[in-house]
Length: 221
Image (cartoon, rainbow, N blue to C red):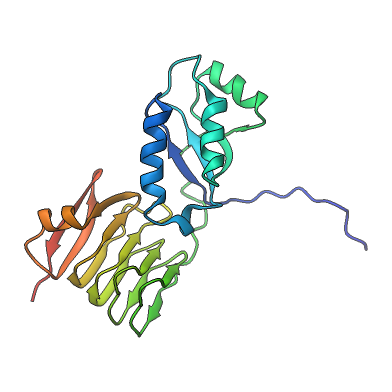
């Protein structure tokens, strides 16, 4: 039997949620640009839902916000948690209204896959572990990028950028034999070199997220 020309099926996708917490679009643009500079190849073209729960002004310029985000090559799927007036504007702009809700406990989980690489990661290289952890048996050079939806383990020196919990996993960690990173990030919270140095007295350590702040602890010898 010939298949119909279209089919409507239920499915689920992981989407990043961008929370807009300030009405001043200049401030939003400045902070957004600084975050995009961290890993531009990871964010460009990524589908986003915009959370507007902090915006209570009915005259908020949603059109300008949309232009700002699309000018940075971000793909806006829809908005969530908006007041009625802003939701009406969103419909006029062709944006979907997405209801936020708790994740069902019966929803099947994607199997975790551990990606193991036994070589040095050189400057300019990017390694991404989708739906799992990333293990590097070697050194990560300056200018290299590690990205994982799960945790990142480096059995050597970590001198580049390491972004764990890229899909929002706040339980992810970054572990390295020697942390000399340009940037570390877990579920969107990040430290630059100066923050790492200010919060650590040890080279070998484990970085994790506690609440909304990163912490680092030394590894047992």
